[in-house]
Amino acid sequence: MRTFLFVSLMALVSLSAPAQALTVEVVGEAALTGAVSYAREQALKDALQQATLRGGAQISSTQLMEHGVIEQDEVRVQSNAQVRDVEVLWEDSHDGVYQVAIRAEVSSQAMCPGSSQRYRKAIAIAGFGLAQPQQATYGRLENVEQALPRVLVNTLNGRGNVHVMDASRISLYQDPRRAPSTETAQQRLTTSVALATQLGAQYVVSGVVRDLDFEPEEQKRGFSLLDSVGFGHKNRQRQFVVDVFVHDGLSGAMLFQRSYHTQGAWGERPDANVGFATPSFWRTNYGDQVKDVLTTVADDVGEVLRCQPFMARIVKARGNRLHIEASAGAGIRPGDKFQVYRTGTFYNLDLEPRTELTDMATVVTVKQVQPQFIIADMASSAEHMSIQRDDMVIAW
Image 1 (cartoon, one colour):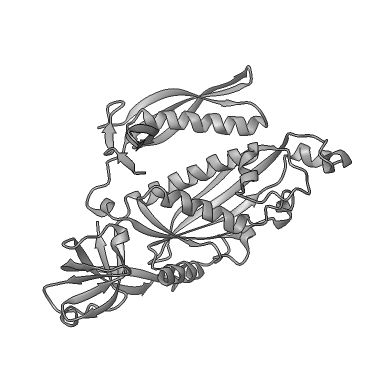
Image 2: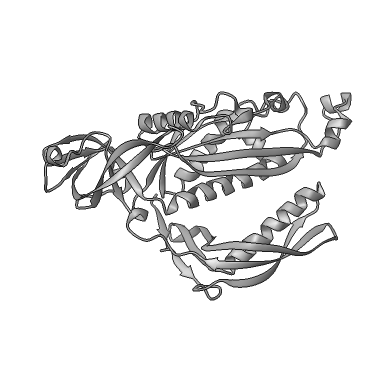
C-alpha cells in the first residue's frame, strides 16, 4: 500500500491593505461555561486573533491521498500581523456567550528574508518543573514534568520544519516555583548553553507548570465520600497554567517567555490513576482543553524561531576544511553556503559574560553531508583565519 502526501506551497494572502497600519474593530466571543474572568480572557484572545487576520495571513494546506482518495484535507491559517494600541470598546454576555469588542491598530509583518527558512533548526525541550507537586496527586498527573515536553516534541517534530530533541529528563531550574526570576543571568547561561552544547541544539525550550488545582469554589466544597466511589460531582473545573521559556543555546539569552492558562471539567475520581497525556487523560474535557493550549504553545515556539537565523557549531577546523555539527536532517545539501563567525566573550558592567559573534567575511561551501555532521571547504585556511572549534556558521 502506497501513501502519497501532497503539501502546497505557503501563500501570502492579503486580507486587507498590508503595506501600512490600519485600525480595525472586531468582536471576540467565548462560551460562558465557567468563571467569567476566564470567558473574558478567551473572548479577548478571539478578538485579537481576528484582528491579526485582518492584517494578512499565511494559508497552507496539506492533503493526504491514499489509493486516489483524499483521506485528510487540512488547512492552516497563520497571521502575519502585529497588533498594538488595543482598546476595549464594550463587553457583554447573553445566552451563555461572553463578547468583547476591541479597536486596535494592525500592521503586517514581512515574511522572513534570506535562506534560514530552508533549514530545520535544532531544538532541545527540557523537563518542565512542577511548582505545586501536591496538586498533581488527583488523577496521578505527577508525570506531567516529562510527559508535557514530550507532547511538544511530538507536535513540533510532526510539522517537519524543526528538529526537536527530547531532553525531558533534564531540568534547568532547581526551584520551579521561583523560576526563572531567581536564576541569575550567569546560571541561565550555564544550564541552557551546556544542554544545547551537549545535544547539538540551537535553542532550548523549558517551562514550569504553575497550577493544576481546582477552582476556588470546588476547593471549598471538598471531596465527599460520593466522589471517592464515583457518584459525586462530575464537573469540577480544574486549572492548567504553564509558563514557557525559549533560550538561545549559544548565548543563554531568553528569546521568549509566556504564560498560558486554561481550565476544563474534571470528572475523574480523586484516586483514579489517569496520568498526564495518557489516552484516558485526552478523553476528559480537561485534557481536551490542555491539548488546545499545548498546540498554541507549539505554534508560538515555532513562530518565535521562524525568523531566527540557522546556526551550527564548528567542531573541527583544519586547513581549508571544516567539520560542522549539523546533518542532512536539517535540510542541508552539498553546494549550500554559510557565513563563518568567530565566537568570543566579553563582560558587561555587571561583570556578566556575554557572547559576541564576529563576521569573518568568509563563506564556506558544503562538500559532504554525513549523518551527524557536515564537511565544508573555504578558500583560506582555518589557521590563517584563526577559525577554531566552537566558532559558528550561519545562514541568515
